[in-house]
Amino acid sequence: MIGLRPTLAGRVCLAAFATLILLFLALPIVVIVVTSFGNDAFGSFPPHSWTLGWYKQLFADGSKWPAALSLSALVAALTTVFSLILGVTAATALVRSELPLRTAVYGLVLAPLVIPQVVIALGLFLLFEPASMLGSPIAIALGHTVLASPIAVMILMATLKGIDERLEDAAASMGAGRLTVARRITFPLAMPGLVAAAVFSFITSFDEFFVSQFLSSVDTVTLPVQVFNVLQYDVDPSVTAVSALLIAVAVVALALVGVVRRLGGSGRQDGLLPTETTVGLPAGNET
Image 1 (cartoon, rainbow, N blue to C red):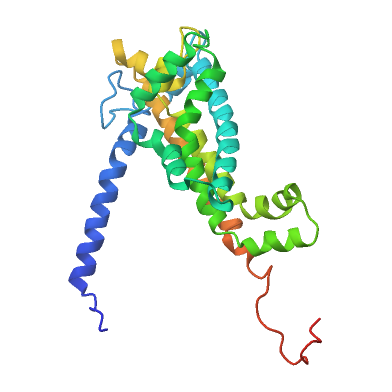
Image 2 (image 1 turned 90 degrees about the vertical axis):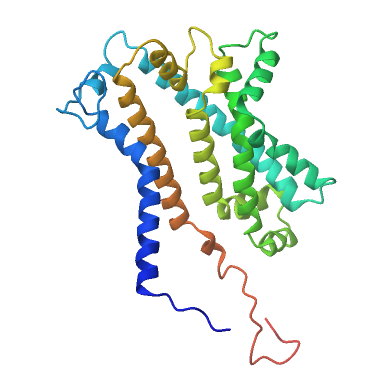
């Protein structure tokens, strides 16, 4: 089959089109970050002068932002733990076992990704309100887990499918129990996927608004809900500083995933189970 050779005009057009797409996607982020350093009280772009005052205002005495930030961090950490537990369990069952109705179970696990979040938030509100759990960080974390765990399951399923099962079978044949195989073989090889699942679960929880809005109370307000409350009645330029911090958290988290995948990628299992045949030994004398 003869392939079409790329032309100079085609390469230039493709590069220009890709650049325009990237600029379109990155432009809102750039505007927010630049505006957060502006001295204009109305948050105009481009700024006429520069300042760090909005960032200082976030942590000034009497500010509600530190409490909202700490609550969001706590809820995101709990959500990460819950999502990893559910993700490892569900992914192992879907990949490593002969689960009946596997397709139906997989569809049920991914259902929160296609159902509108406001519907899920309303259902969680009706679930936790009779139990007087509204405003509890545990309740908010459990609600976020409903949205974060499907992402963790997908990442961990792809990770487990990339691990050679012969490594686990070899360890089991030598007397290792299931926990030993998981601790010494599966989890070390799946570490990049575990880190990626943890990071995306954390980001999903940290940025979640609908579930937090339905499950929060006056005293427990997460960062996205606080942003909404501030912008609902006034234009506060400090929101741009908060948004820049959220962007920084996402960028650092994605960079962490990239570093972990580069340092401990799927190549870690290369060579652990040689498959080449022994050459030069008589039959029956392979050692």
